Length: 202
Image (cartoon, rainbow, N blue to C red; front, top):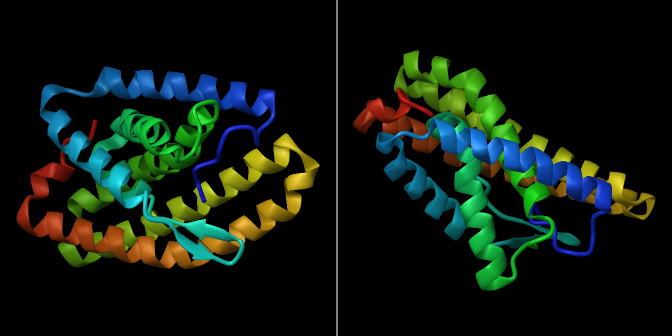
């Protein structure tokens, strides 16, 4: 799963992830305008709720991440959205960890922010059907990148985690398909009913 618990990662990985997360969240907060707050809150709450439901896959488990969807709709606001959701999950349910909060934010939000920035202009110009295809591919890629980053976080912390890292990457393959469908469907729906939501990502 993408929520790495406390006591797993090495200090350099924790510090590096924390520094990047602080900068990214600050950037996201700086660029959020008043008109961005409602959609940021809605997607943050959706991520908070859906990512609590993890399905076992082999020795690991998977859950929806919504990284591609949030990246396309929110832009850099994905960082504070994910930060708030992960913090509440760690405090209220012990899901993930507090010391690993920075790494988890980076692993989940950074792929969405980068890929979202690349494909958002194409989604805005595309027809609903084409936008669904672009968003579906982007959502699947975000999951794959998150899986690689989680695996890298484990592998960089200890060589003992190498096998676990490889297994974790494999468990993300079915999630890529599901996430691609969910992201594509949501963007297609938004394009049809309220396309202006895609025109002002922070």
